Amino acid sequence: MLMTAIGRDLSASFYGELAGVRTLITGLSPECGVDVARAFADHKARLVLHVGECSPETDALLPLLNETAWDIKLFTDACQSSDEAVCFAQNAVQAFGGLDVVINMIPVTAADLKDRVSIADVEDMVSEKLTMPLLTTRVVANRMRLTLTEGLVLNAMTTPATHTAGEAALAGVARATLAAFTRREAENWAENGIRVNAIGPRAATSEGGAYLASEPDIASLALYLASKRGKSVTGYVFDSDGAGLR
Image (tube, rainbow, N blue to C red; front, side):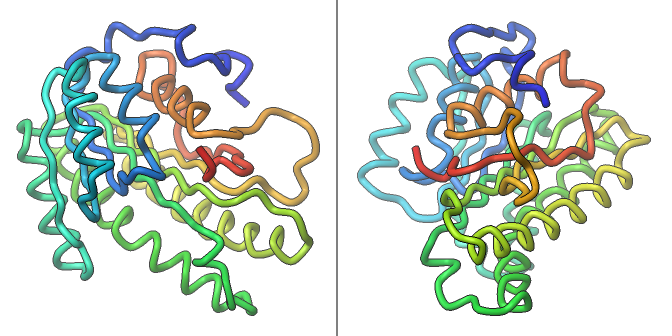
C-alpha cells in the first residue's frame, strides 16, 4: 500500500522529526531487528532495546548503534511469563520517562512451524508469540494515554517465504490472528491518538502489488509510520513475504 510512497531505498528518506524520539524495539537479535534499530539510530532516536539473549553479535552491535543514536538503554529480561513481560514493559517506559514508538519484532522461523499440523497448533504458536507484544502494547499505550502522547505501536511478524499450499495456509492463520489483534487494539486506543499497525505474512490470495521482502523494507515502513506522514495510518496489517531473511 505505502511502498510506492516511501520507496524501497532506506537512504532515500530522512525524517528529521524523529531525532530524539523515544523508541522501544523488542525481540532484537542478530537475526532480527538489526536493520530497524540501525534505521532509528541513524535518525538520532533514543533507543530502548530488548535483547532476549546476549551474544558476541549483539555485543558488537551496540557500539555501532551508539555512533549515531541519541542514547541507548539495553534490557535483557527473559520475559518468560506474563508478569515478567509486564514488569519489563513498565521498566522500559520509565527508561526515558515515556515512549513515542514501540516496534515489537516477532520472528516466526521454520522451526516454529515444524510439526504444527493443525490450525489449532498454529493458533497456539501465534498466541505464544503475541503474548509479550500484546502486554507491551497495553502497558505502553496506557502510559501514552496518561501523558497525552500520540504514539505508534508496530508489531512486525516475520516469516520464511511460503512455497507450498500448506505453508501458505499456516501463514494465513498467523496473519488472521495478528490482524484481529491489530484491529482490536487500534480501535481501543484510537481516541487517544495512539496508532497500532502490524506487518504479517502475505495473504495467500494476494497476487501482485507491493509487499515487504526484507528487513530494510520493514525499517523503511517503520520510519514512515513513526513520522508525521504516517499520523493517519492505524489498524493496518502490511504484507510481507520472506522478510524473515535478512
